[in-house]
Image (cartoon, rainbow over all chains, first blue to last red):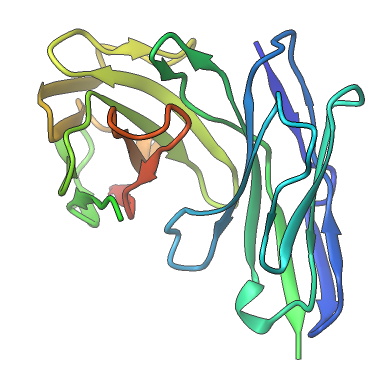
Length: 117
Length: 117
């Protein structure tokens, strides 16, 4: 079984600053996917960014980028030029592909990110 | 984009009664749906994997006789909480996988808040 650890329960930064959320995971799998999800107060889960384990290149999506260190089993999220709308819970998640599909997601405990004006 | 709906969005029921939550994929056929549970200020925990036309696969520690899952069609999965008790009060979220899409892609519903009095 895999585990996902987020060691920062809450973080607070000023608007326009850069913030990094940490995530480590443990698995014996070699092929898997890692995700960062955002959950705003509406509680709708929103996919922020995805990383395939077989890809060495770090994924980026506009202001969001990851630092994926496979050997260290680390998957941090960097948010640049933070905005008030980035305030939310952020969950790191792990998924193992299975045959033609995939297992459900294993989530970390989450980091509550607060962007201060 | 793919849309998943849940009904109801909020339900209050009395202890000892049963309540059914629906998860629908609106614009794609979902062969696999997942049910998650989220307690207040906590992470999402995978409860079960629902496959169309077959029995659901429950995660360890989830009572399958209490949480009945039916995936009778390619667009609908239902979660029935039987003989609900106050400790079953939680936020229940479903996600669905589009078999025509990438294996890692899951689309989340908006969630259902269950309060058992």
